[in-house]
Length: 160
Image (cartoon, rainbow, N blue to C red; front, side):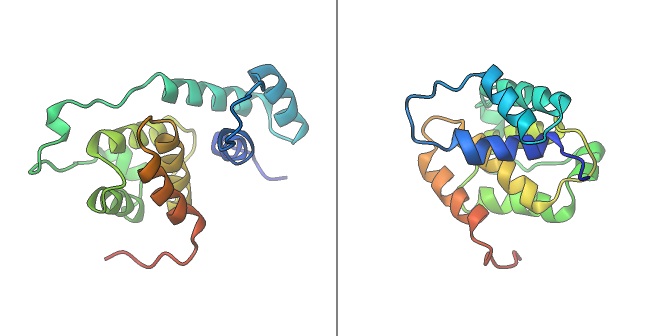
């Protein structure tokens, strides 16, 4: 049996509920919890996933000017480099370089990655987390659409 993680729950929710254009979102946490349990997710992971989403929703990006200086660069803490391998850190930098992520949004993505249980995060997981962060930010529809293309397009080339 595969160990279901918080990220598995989040991806399931995102694919099945959060990405709906349906304005009549009458699905509440209790009914979603029941459905997720029926789908085989452990209750503890479901609760952590909802907490993760609530924290994302209540955590606006820090738009202070210290993030927006052109000469600024991100230095990762040792615990962050453990969780985010070089490929993932390079991908986040790539997203900034091509204008999908702003520095403040990158920080939210890193915060949400660090809030997940587990060991090293892989590139696919970083893509999904970034997509969830952009989805949750008003005014980011263009960046979200570009990120969605990167998540669902398996032919993304190797970054240099």
